Each structure stands twice: as structure tokens, then as C-alpha cells.
Length: 488
Image 1 (tube, rainbow, N blue to C red):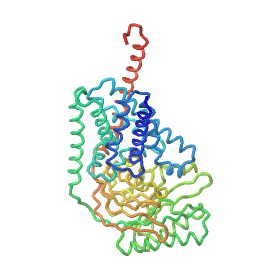
Image 2: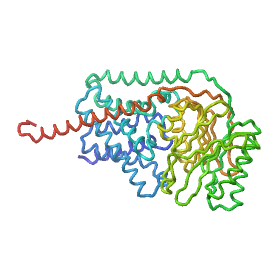
Image 3: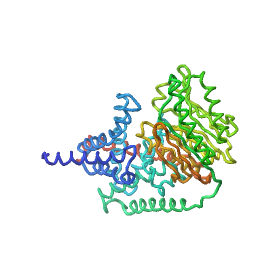
Image 4: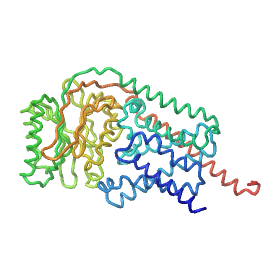
């Protein structure tokens, strides 16, 4: 092969990898997600497998490594290398498993193979992995409101199917064009599904907003308080929270949410802190939710406390799902779903990573929550947008408002349709506050709350059939090559 051909293929692989970085980034370019994955799939379809494999592998490693710095922040280096390697291998698997059927059959239905496999893997990840489907390409659409509404029907799986169907169709169309068996049907089907989803989204967003007015305050100070922090240091930060809460209360806040683990306390200090926030709620006549960690010997826990305007502790909630640093520290996991009646509406309690799991978010939909309060703590502002928009997905899927207070991230209020009603970045002392008066419309009943991830599990079943068919084809091809009667 001439050197210039090799260089051209190398350049194509590198360019594809660079574009993939904008797709796999923690704040991706949403519209590129509909186009760029077609490139490695097209390379796999059009080129011989030996050439295609190294080109696609190079492109995917370049793309997947875009989050190296973030992974390094939350896990040790060997784990980072393993995660990037597994992510790259998974992309290779999806692309070349799809290629096998696309090239063999060259029929309209083969455009469905890649999206079905993607949704199947995403569904299994959500059910089996400790971080769920955190990296799902569906979350890349977090700011595209019309297309997001499909989540109210079929959840993340429905949106992911659509997002991966388009590049699959583009790759097949470029590779085969009119020669694809009944190709017109594949192209028309893709166009119809995208158009129907957009029409549904725009129609859903036009629903009138009716309900009860509520004024939420969010307060965040990025400075941490550890279990052995000095009294002067801790009291300075605590006074900052007090001042911000008092200011919001004078401006009309009815419910004030503070972030996750504003302090990690030794057990002996817990009663004093509970008394402090009880008095603060009573003094300002507001509901206050605050996130607290408790450092109990080799068994730390992560809690949120909700105080009533009368000063009583209305509910305590223990976090279910732990971030990687918490798993290494052996944090205990909660199992309860807490709902409280606030001003005549049902409120649910969650903490940060809990809302990264669709099955968890659905539990509050089944409990008819109108609002879910979410103290959070993101990682050095790197994943603030993504973590916030994943949480917003839960509100769309299940029809409730979300109030999220993050350290090192975003302070956000979103409605059951995913509209960001108020948003501000957190900051260090003297901190940041946000005040938002909104109409609590929930609970808005959704199809997803009723059926769950049915779409995802159907794709798991379909993927198993596709993979079985692909293996059958491979074995038949091997026998045909070895057979002396085969003229080839």
C-alpha cells in the first residue's frame, strides 16, 4: 500500500477521533452526536476488516481519552486506563457487530442493528454497573428540549435509540445508497421517527403550566468542612450558610436547599448540628434541607435532613448510590424512599448520584412526587453540566420538578418538561444563592412512569437475536471457506 494512502487513512482516523472528543466530552456538542458516530461505522462498512479495525480503534481511543483528566480526579490511574480501554473495546464491539449484519444482508432493517445494540448495552449498564449508564449518549441532548420529551414515553432508551439510529442510517446510506435492499423504507422510517419525536416534543412543551406557586432558595458554598476541621474554620463557613439562608428567607423563600455533605461530622457533633439547623429553620420560618456526612468508624454515611418551619426534623434520608471516592471509603448505602408533604404537595428526597439511575427516579414517580429536592456535590466543576442534566432527565421521565443544590457545580431548578427555570454556578465563600418562584405543576403523569424501561429491555432481547444471527453467519462463512466444494 502506498505511503500516501496509509497517511490518508491515518489522517482520517485521527480526524474522526478528534470529532468523537466533542461527542464523548462531559459537555458534548449535542448536534454532533447525531452525525459523528456515522464516521467510524462507515469506515468499518466500507474498508476491509483489517484496515478498518486499526483505524476505528485509533479514532475511538482518541475520542474516549477526552475525559482522562476527569477520570483521574475520581479514580486511581490503573482504573482510569482500564475504564478508557473498556469504553474503547465496547465501541469496537458495537461497530463491528453491526458491520457483520449490515455487510452481509445490505437490507433496510440493518440500520436498526447499531441502535438496538447501543440501547441494549446501555440498559444492561444501567442495571448492573455501580455508575449505571452515566456515559449514555442520550444525556448529550440535555439542552435540546423538544427531543428530550421522548424520555417521558420511553426514557433514556427511547432517546438513545433515536440518537444512534440517525448516524446508523447515514453510514448505511453513504455506503450503499439506492443499492440497499428497500433502502427507501429505512431512510423514510428514520425521517418519520425523528419528525414524530420532534412534533411530540413541541406539542408537549405547549401544555399550559398550572399548579401551585412555590418559592425555592438554593444556597451553596464550595468550601468543605471535614471531620477534624478547626472550630474557627467550620463556624466561618456555617455562618456563611446562615447569612445566605436568612437573606433568601427575607426575599420570600419557602423552601431552602443546601448541598450534599456541607460538613462531614464525627457522631458526637451530630446533635449540635441538628439543633443549629432546627433553630435556623424556626427563626426564618422556612423548610431547610441540608446534606451531612457522618464519619462513623469505617462505616461513614451520607444523609440529608429536612427541617420544618416549626424547627422539627421532618425527614432524614440516606443516600443510595455512591460516587467512586465514596465507594473506596466504604460508605453505607440507604434503601428508603422518603416523601414528605410540603404546602400540600408531595416532595421526594434524593442525593446527587441517586438521580443518575432511572429506576431510582421512577420510584418517586410511582409515589406521585411533585418535587424532588437534591443536595449534590460535583467534581471540581468538570461534570457539573452533565450531572445536572442527568438529574433533569429524571424529572422529564416521571413528571416532577427538581431543585438541585450542588457544590462545585450548578444550582438549578427545572420543571417536569426539562426547562431550566433558574440556574447559577456555585462558588467559594461567601458562597452563592439562587431564588426562584415557580409554578409547581406536578405530578405530571408520564408513560415512562407506568411502563419503566420496557423499550430498553425489548432492545436487549432484539440484540440477543442479532448477535446470535451474527455468530451463525460467521460460523457458516468459516465452514464455507474450509469446504473443498466451495469454488471461492
